[in-house]
Length: 248
Image (cartoon, rainbow, N blue to C red; front, top):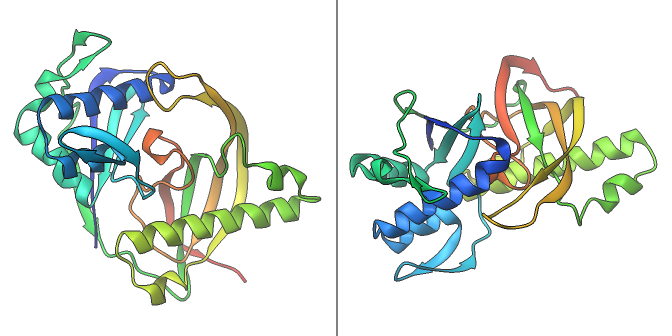
């Protein structure tokens, strides 16, 4: 079962400020003495007595984004409970960013939902995948060295399938279903080189991102993300057609 929460605020930020927004949100949780488990789901790090430790490699349970110019959060499974706990404790009223107190006011009531992510044999779902980052700026050599566009598509499809299978396995899908997951790249809508940073004050990195049209035989909720830097708003899936067919 995938439980998810989508929440956006009246706070206006740019994509380049996502890392700052995320850092400020985590700092709020730390100041509020949230327990180590909750902090680890917010930050993807080990925590001991409120102090951050080593990184945890896993699907981020809380993801920070910009939607229509507004700061947003998308959470899944354990992350949903963490965000709900912060809302119920009125911690969002204590939010600070760039040294200024800026109460986080939801622009709409949080949208929550749940679904059983199922693999189907014939019917599939089509998604628009925005700002997908399959590689970081140091690991895209294989893609650029591929001799043909067919080979590049094969590399992208492998990255998509592997990423979806690993994340859904981690979130509770059974091994039998995970092995059946298939993803087909229908269209590369556009590519773009973007800069990003992963923490406040850090240098910006530059990498290529893709807007893709994909089809898969597994149902995932709107807002599910794939690729690298998922916690920072990259690789968001929005379903556009629930009745497409996967060829091959």
